[in-house]
Length: 213
Image (cartoon, rainbow, N blue to C red; front, side, top):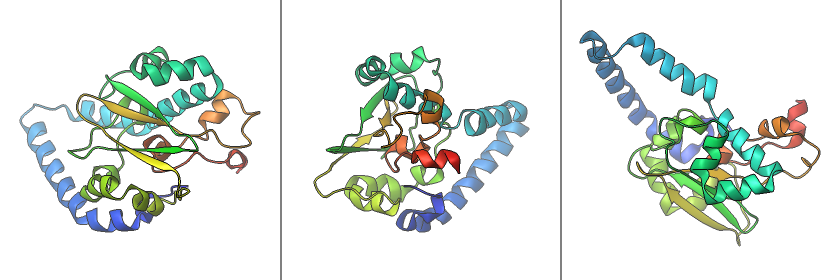
């Protein structure tokens, strides 16, 4: 099960300086745009707050929970994710074209954007820093099993790992395996088990007992 970002050893250690430089560049650009009147700082703060705190991964978690309890919705999600997600009211920035991929005991799916940081904001919120790092973007393709191990996800040797490359045209949502022992939980409770990382593929859902913690 995945933990805090800084526990990801091989990825996190190598991108700290990169993120620091990137942050400085973004702040400098933001200052120039605000100074010239191209950007309203209040509107910018509102946008960030919406995707970082109010949306976060909660929308995606509700999509996954519905797929777990409703077989017909699950089939719709896997065949036309864009429409199925929009039906629940989740549309917008960076999520116009979605594909859902389902984890099974035989296959585990992992999402990356090798070119930049394409990410489904409307269902997962803002991307984590490690998702945008050069290390993750390159190693997820070359050594997906090793990357997953660093996130605490150890898969059986026979499990096939499929890596999906997000682009400007399409974003992916992983539907993780429903946790054992969650059969009696309602949809909202199930959504509470779905983590952001499990919908990227770098984690697994929480166990049902986590709801009592």
